[in-house]
Length: 155
Image 1: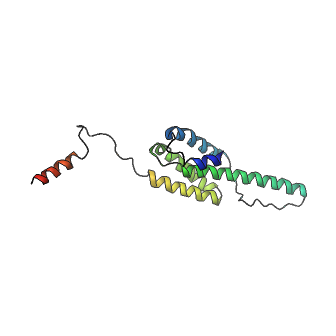
Image 2 (image 1 turned 60 degrees about the vertical axis):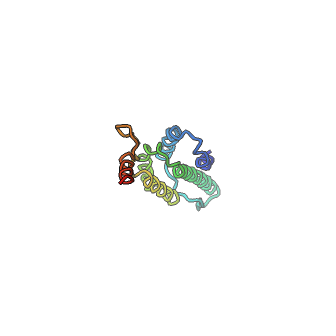
Image 3 (image 1 turned 180 degrees about the vertical axis):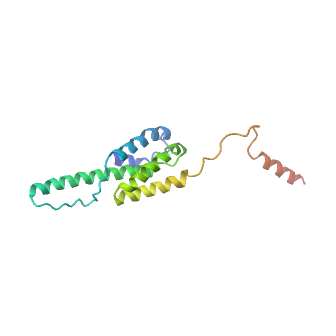
């Protein structure tokens, strides 16, 4: 399910209600990544044990840890692929805080994804949003420039 979410989030971003998506998705992903311990096992999952029983238990644990690591990686990839729209701006400080925390605790593969996500969020949201309020007198924003142009045209 996490794989489907990761793969389809970019494809359907025009059809989504982004504020509602962020309202549900960001706290959920944040909770999962903060409250579960990261797996320091890579994709190999090799363990050396003496007896057959210990080997099978170790392999089971390694597979479990590998699945856990892949799930955490998928969740970080979902954060990386979130559309950079204005509704995400309010979640940016908490996401960057989470990603900095993960950067210190995750394995190398996930830490690289965290760093990419931090860079993308910082690049997009480090500046204040553009001003949108109308002029107090209700005239178009470029009215002064338009007046100057007409003066130069008449001169």
